[in-house]
Image: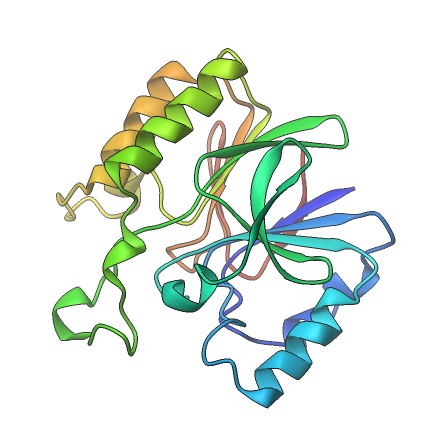
Length: 221
């Protein structure tokens, strides 16, 4: 089975509590950003990552705006289920932006990144990295990967959402980032069944196909 949840922010207790503790061998957990377990390379962090990597299921996450992107970029890239990943530890992997994966019978498009809401007050290298926003090259690679599958996927996993959905959640927010604009393009051109994103720390279905996730763990419909 494929399961999806929202931002974890390095909270190990989420894995020890229901329902994550019930995931079985060969299951896959998709995390919609802010994984948070790759932060400072401390010995305690490495111990936690080894523990996570030994889970009987796979963990694939897209990065959000509270992940140490400098450290993540240091992990080697490899192919996994038709897309590219960075293997963090054992069964723990980061999705490379714009990759398309074939997991079980589902085709899944993954695109991390975002823009920190408190960008003006955060310090680069401590809690903010300029590469949070995808580059033009990453957008083009995502389009190329989607073209290979005729812009048809079963599921989209991201941290941020489209500008249209962003305005639906917060009608007073008129700011649109390049990633929001790309996701608007994706909404218009891509055929998909469900889209899951985590940046709003909200568990809410936005009919007919969008899902804001935080603490809920849902099986892929």
